[in-house]
Length: 175
Image: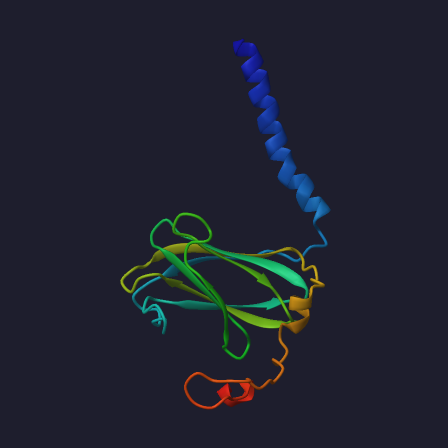
């Protein structure tokens, strides 16, 4: 029985060791993984939203790709924000990566440089972290009536009645 367990363990370890080598050969054409070993400290600028130290990393992304962005730390509660090239916030996350780790899964709408803001959930946290961003597939275009409306202006319509005041149009609510 002991010999069987030893042989099984050796076979498992050998297979586990070879798998990454094989998968790297198969995935040569995939985009490279973006990886940063960083450390947030008291000298880093403060994040406007969370008030903790922040670092900003800019990476190019391609339209139609799905990116998985992970921030992992054993020293603090990770917090991620994703911004477009103009600085508009597209996504944010606190604990979707499990435990206190942050994860954003982003369906990239257009080619360009995107900014990943690494920060902490609380203002007085700091320490080491690992940031990774990798493609996790190609986005599938949904063909539903709802998806056809995304990104388009809502049609203007007028109400037939009002409870308090006069009936209005949807465009009256703009702004």
